[in-house]
Image 1 (spheres, rainbow over the protein chains, first blue to last red):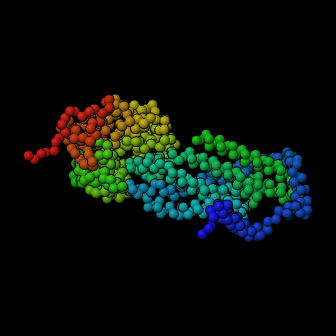
Image 2: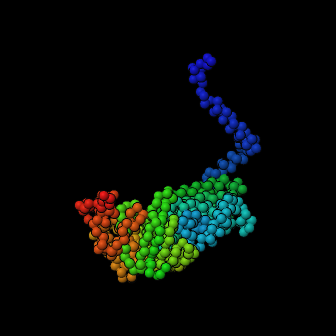
Image 3: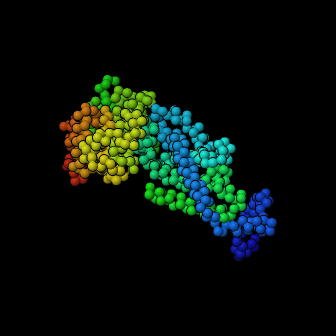
Length: 278
Length: 275
C-alpha cells in the first residue's frame, strides 16, 4: 500500500473524536433548551424591558427611612437567629446519630463490646434516617413547615435542623472514622465501654474538625435562611419577597445590600473562628 | 486450674495475618504477685505475648488462662469486667494528642466508672488528686494540665504508666515501658512499677530491652527467642552464657548504660559433637 506517511501526519488524529464529542454535547443540550423555552431575546422585548427598567430604576436611592431600617434590622436579627438556632438544633440531632452510625468502633477483632448488638441493630436505621434527613432540601422542608406551623421563623428553624442535622451527622461519622483508633482501642482493652471510648479516645482528636465544619454549616445556614424566607419562613427573605411583590425597588435594594453585608460578615467570622481553632 | 495462676499459657501460638509466626507453642505460667521480666532480641515476640496476655489480641492456637478464666469463652460483659483488672502499658502510649494529661490519666479507670461519671469528668476532672498522685511518683505532676501533644516521647510514656498506676489493675503488663527514658529515669521508673506491684501484691510482667534493668529489678527472668521460651529462671541462675545464647544473633548485649556492651568474651555454646 502506498498510504503515505506525510498524508497521515498532515491531519490531527484527535480532530474527529473532538468534533464528534462537541456535536454530541450540543445534541444533548438541545432538548433542554427546547424544554425550558430559553430565549434571551425576551429580556429585550419592550413588553418586558419597560417594567423591568422601571423597577430597577427605583433601586436608587435605596430606602433609608428610619421605620424601614428598623424593620430590616429586626429581620436581619431574625435571620441570624434562625441560622444559629437551626444549626444548634441540627447538632442536637446529628451528634447522637453520628455516634450510632460510625463504624470505626465496631471492634470485632478484640471481641465485641457488651452493647455491640444494640449498636448494630441501630446502625442501619440510623444511617437511613440521616440519608432521609439530608436527602430533601431545606427549602422543601420549609414549604412543608410553613403549611404546618404557619408563616414565621419556626418553620425556618425546623427546616434547617432537619436538613443540616442529616449533613452534620454524616460528616461527623466520617471524621470519627478518619481519626486514629488506637487510643479508643486501648481504652476498650482496659474495660471501658463503647461510648466511654468514643468520648475519651475519639472525640479529643475529632473535635477541632467537627467544630470547624459546624461553623461552616452555620455560614451556609445564614444564606439558606434568607432563601427560605421567600416561602414565608421568616427573616430577611420574607421581607425581600414582600418588597419585590410590591415592586418597591428602593426597599429591595436596601435589603439586598444588607444581605450581601451579612453573608460577607458570616464568611469572615467563620474563617476567623476556624483559623483560631486550627 | 488452681487459682495459683495469674496468667498461664499452654502451647500458645500467634500467627499474624501475613503468616509470620510471632508466638510458637509457648509455655509460661505466672503466679499471682510474681514479678517477671521478659527479655530477648527484637522480633522475639515480647510485644505479641503481652498483647495476648492483655486480651488485646486473640491467640491463634493454644490455651490462655487469665485470672482463672479463659477470656475468649467469656461473654462480652464478663470479658469487659476481666479487662478492667488488666493494665497494659504500651511502648508507644496511645494518647489522643489534644487530650490533657489529667484526662488521659483518669481514663485509666473508665472501666470502673459509669458513663455519667465519665462524662462529668470531661467537664471537670473527677479526681485531680488521684491523677496528681499517680504522676507524682513518676516526677510528672507539674504537667498535670498540659496537653499530651506538648509532651516529649519520654514524658508521654510516663503518662501512659501513670494511667495504669491509676487504674490499679491486678495484673500489670508492661511492654518496654521505659524505652524512651534516659538510664537514670528508666531505672527509677521500673523501680516504681516493681514497688507498686509489691505494695499491692499484684502481678507484674514487663518486657525490657535493657538486660541490666531486668537483672536489677526482677526476681524471675524469661528469655524469649523466635516466639519460644529459651529459658525461664530465677535471676541468680541467669548467667552470661545464657544471655550470650539469647542474643547470639545480635552479637551484643543490649543494656542502657553507654549503649550496647560487647558480649563477654565467652565461647558461644558449641553444638555437641559426636566423636
